[in-house]
Image (cartoon, rainbow, N blue to C red; front, side):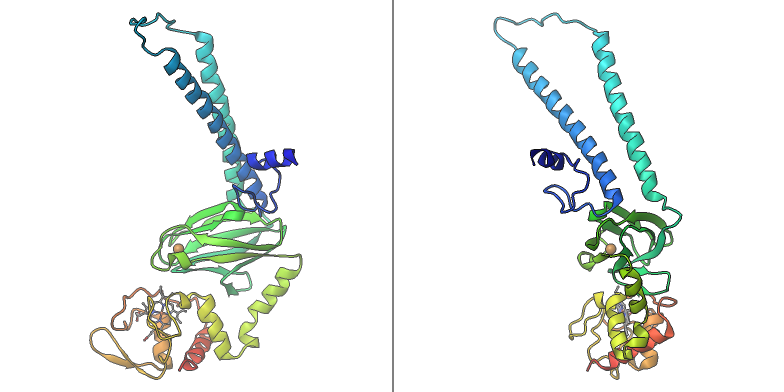
Length: 327
Ligand SMILES: [Cu+2]
């Protein structure tokens, strides 16, 4: 018990299945390595802090100026043994930290050849995960004990992909791909955050990693990939609006967000920037999704990203059918 507690405080207990006071759960193999290096750096710093500050305080008191001693005490100018020691020991320590840290960093960046690849896209203000089947989801689903590599990019601004339980963090930039990988060790759900201030909805930009039992992931993917076939178009449209990030900017309750509300949009006249109006029919909605800058709604900023090439015709039709139900 005492042993385990000390191990936990030092961060050395091999897997903190439940997470400790200082650290979140270690949900991946990489988390264990990162925590060990972190504790090494931490405890080396604590050791030297205590050593140096105690010596300093001691010397300040011991050699303070006193009435009886108003001239500097003669002291040696050199002590070769001491100087070599306090140079050599820190050098060895920083070399150990560098080699260990750098190897771990390289391992984190080079996915194993047999890893399962998921495409991660940051978009204001939602993470999107694209699976090899073409299915796009709002959460990252994976199998336990399977190496998963993430090919990550951004649709608009800089976002920061962060899974504390996996000690995994990387910024994504538009026009560029970065890779990370992990192997989850325990089924369950883990939080994903965005760590770059990317605009109004930044603090809502979170998602989950869902780690499935063996076999569960394949069943989930099969079912999730078929929703266009198994749901009615309006239901599928509702799901798309939620999972593709439209809901981050568009409400369905009548209040305007970053974008206009979807409530009672379909079939009405929309006032556009520049004083014109346009009827909100199927073509208008389609154009708004594929070429958002073509017609700007009066009173709003032209900040909607294009979904051209990212939503299929069938998906756009489903969204249109859903908007028709919002009266
Ligand atoms: Cu973000």
